Image (cartoon, rainbow, N blue to C red):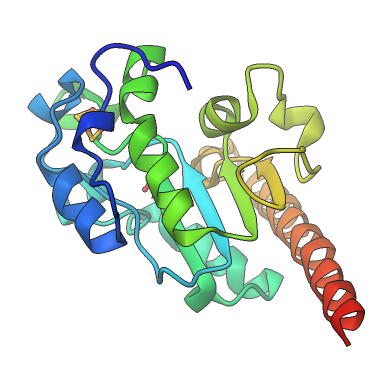
Amino acid sequence: MIREQGDASPLVPSRPTLKKLQIAAAGCQACDLWRTGTQTVFGEGKPTSTVMFVGEQPGNQEDLQGKPFVGPAGNLLDKALVEAGIDRSKVYVTNVVKHFKWEPRGKRRIHKKPNAMEINACRPWLEAEINVVKPRVIICLGSTAAQAILGSKFKVSTQRATFVQSPLAPFVTATVHPSSILRAPSDDQRRAEMAKFIADLKKIRKATDSEAAAAMARQR
Ligand code: URA
Ligand code: SF4
């Protein structure tokens, strides 16, 4: 792969484990986001996880706690996983960009979308996580993650929960970002968006489960 200048690849250890990656990424300064973020928020989950969720970047809570998906979006994701019957202990969660990008709004820090340079700078960390975990299923959350991983043509609005051929994993797909559900303008719309999100996750679970069952039957 052709690398942009100034990406994180020189920092990636040659025989990585998740622990080694996390330690190396803690000192990353490959783009400017380390200057304003509190800390690198690396992915989290067992190396044997079969499902990987990829978000955009850590939020305010994640930045402060140093863990991905521990704030409101993470709580919503956890609820949806239970509803969809996806075992949280087999799930790895991470982000395309590993520092919180924000701008001040009064006393609050408001999320700001990462740009292409920042996404490219941070990509080696995500690629290394995928190489170590080797998930069966990768689920991008929201269009920033989907476009970074599936290409700029992918439209979450029309292609959510459909699978895309990819060298990254046997099953690669995307759905909406849980934050977009939290931003729905009314309770009714929030409930409707949550139901659609759970339906996507169920559909993905069933598609990937039945494939697993078929593969096992073939081995017998
Ligand atoms: N939103 C994300 O995309 N990632 C997180 O870790 C938290 C919120
Ligand atoms: Fe490094 Fe990614 Fe943080 Fe930029 S956002 S400094 S590339 S870890």
